[in-house]
Amino acid sequence: MGGQLQEPLRERGHPVDTQPVYATPNPPTPGRPIIFDPNFCHGCNVCVTICPEDVFLPSPTKGSPPIILHPEECWYCGVCVDDCNRQGALRLNHPLQQRVRWKRKATGEHFRMR
Ligand code: SF4
Ligand code: SF4
Image 1 (cartoon, helix red, strand yellow):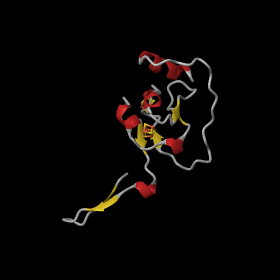
Image 2: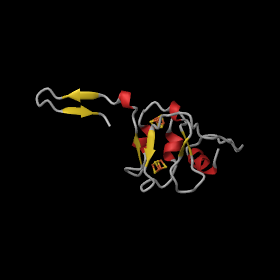
Image 3: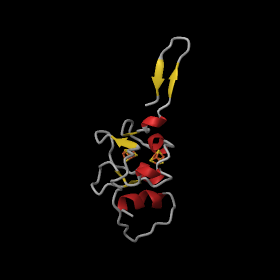
Image 4: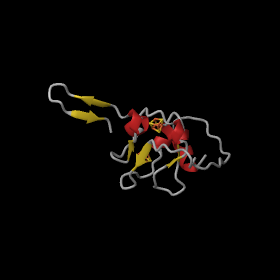
């Protein structure tokens, strides 16, 4: 577990394992559940800490967006987006088949979830 992740966990009173963990992202997974905008993300790693599915790892480059390590584990709960302290730093990228469409009967307008 990287030092950048340990500090927020310590501050919240969680026990921290000091043994290093080595992992690599899962390239064959086609899903990209989260899109980071490096122009807004300042690499605070709050989203890394808060994600209940441990989708992210802190970037080895300080101040950069986290690494998406396990995209297939994301359940699109949106907690990472809600708790991010930089508006626009990340957004959910729902799979196409989950982007619900609907029509407003009164006007005939069509909408689709982004
Ligand atoms: S996306 Fe938000 S919470 Fe996550 S590292 Fe960037 S600024 Fe921090
Ligand atoms: S949407 Fe939920 S499960 Fe997916 S990366 Fe964000 S916090 Fe984790």
